[in-house]
Image: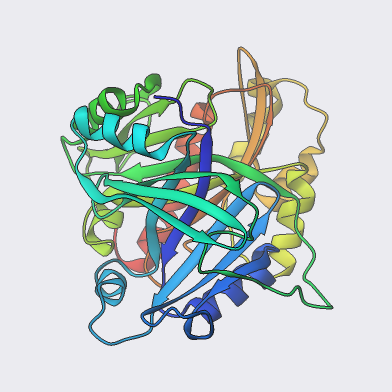
Length: 360
């Protein structure tokens, strides 16, 4: 099934106007579209934000007892839709359902003076859905029903974010292989990496992970499940506070991770604290890289190398009150992996935060 890439990520949030301001001011996104009462939307308000090739949609309910409000009450601010760009929505939807996907919305055509878009959606893990978006005949800001948002005369500058590198899902114990088969059967994705509990563990906790990707490599979906450990893992904590499976984090690529992280810190974004001994052996483990070790240590940036090159990565603390959704910033230089050499340091940093929250 040909999937061009990720069209957008939609989050259901408690207050889309305030959430939009947060992602603008803290992460440097620009507001490009809006739907709400002023555009004829009577039940929801949505803001469309962009930076580089990243498109986020933040949506909240406008009426009491609305399903969007129920979703937020259950999961907190959380990813609802991971939308795929396709050449033919009808064909993609029909094939997905034929292969076993559960439909959540039949194909529909929506139009306005800027053109036509064809949309449909299917269920994924937890309450997450995958939408199919065919927009080759559309020239508007986002979708029909959204008005182009006038840019602020004093816009917040971006922080150098370029694209969505991967989207990580957390599922329950024993469910990982089921969802790997789902993406293989329904989308024809292939398994890119697999990590066992021994590979991703600390003294206290562990997880297992498999990564699936589509044919062109533009969609990468790691799927995590908890593994047995002496204490509760980060996946167990997520599943508790998210009330089930869901999207754990979005990984966003940067053109210059040092500059990006510095800008994000100045705007108030908090990152996980990397254990100090990590940097003592970094050069020996990763080899020479054209980055200042002092900068990496000062900003808590991790480094790893595989047979194709190296990468740099860093992880924010949760972006909301619940210890669920967070953001990864990643800069790749040939490497196609996911920082396997950093798993132990990352786990230890996460466990420090779990311990502070009383959830370890």
